[in-house]
Length: 402
Image 1 (cartoon, rainbow, N blue to C red):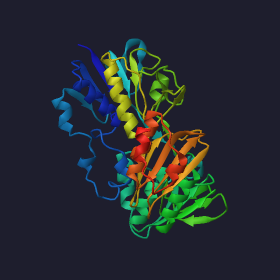
Image 2 (cartoon, one colour):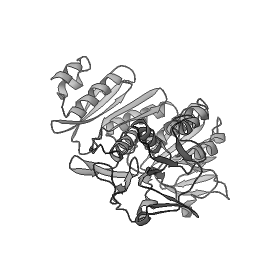
Image 3 (tube, rainbow, N blue to C red):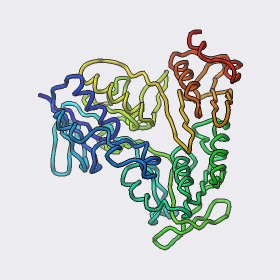
Image 4 (cartoon, helix red, strand yellow):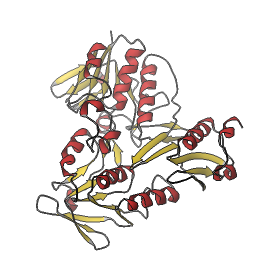
């Protein structure tokens, strides 16, 4: 009997081990996680869980009993100190485990502010794991002043929760506009207006110079010379693939752990899936940060360990919840040349990205029908007549059979 070890007990790791057992794998399976809790959902951390609307147990992807019932050894609160590929070993300090196949689902880590500008002061938080959210939750009291650094989706979601709870919220984004890295100006405009209607002070083209305070953060100096009094700070300036273990083990790194179309790394006995990987995509190589990707790639790796020999065909889609708006994104907008707006009533809108005549992606706000149709078109490699898309009275469904 062989031994499959999975390092990283997040969405990808949990999906991988469940798929292995579900497909009849009889090998020993060990899932190792650094956190002291079973695998759980991360998206609610910055929304429902932070607001106290979701209990801890509801975060768990499966009850802890599931792993015992499936004969999966779950090692929680366990730190992997090294991987030794030549001997197929995983080191847990002085303890050594041997594997036949190893899967890395180590996810990603938040970029933090350097200590030189006050990033190590008490009261400065990131939103990445359960401990982060538990640590900052007591700060969310009405009238307290929070500074959010970074205008991406994590920062905007945190701003929405804080504003809904009655805090005084200032968000600074060093780029010219919020969401500049991931969305068109039209989507940025939509969410800027949404947040300002809820009282969030959004400052674009303004960076953080430094945080101030004696041990505990109490203020901020911004790049435009202005200053703020703050009670706490949330940092949302992006994430990086957690590839330290892989790199130390000599695996090839390329914007994350480099894997082939089957999810195999540069070592034939080591696989990887989820946020930590870069993989082939349409003649290039990309890295995706999303729950659906983590699940799909991890399940594919499980099947390929069992001999399926299938290539990964990524279907990128994402979502974000802010106030009463649900954003759904289908496809990747990289290389777009034009954006077509489809504006409905109230807060309903969608923005369709084109490269020439080719449809690349859709951002849909409170418009699940536009999202569903756009997603199916993108996945099928079909386009859509921009004139028809822009006509909010037009029925888009016939596009699917065109």
